[in-house]
Image (tube, rainbow, N blue to C red; front, side, top):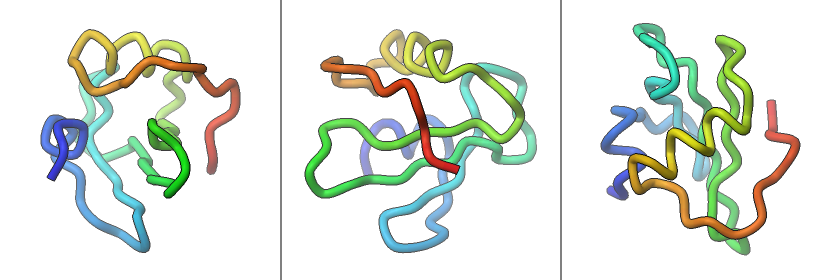
Length: 77
């Protein structure tokens, strides 16, 4: 299991898809959606509680869970 999935205490919900605790707020409901794509370095991420994508990226970089590169402006839902 990778660092992002461990830090967010993510649970597997589907094919390469996980739901975890968002590190940007005091999450108790697992609002962070994480989906890994075969051809991408970083996963698609979305916080259902409303955290901004760029805030997620900054936090994940600080935690060592984001590999840099181009940041996506849109995350999946």
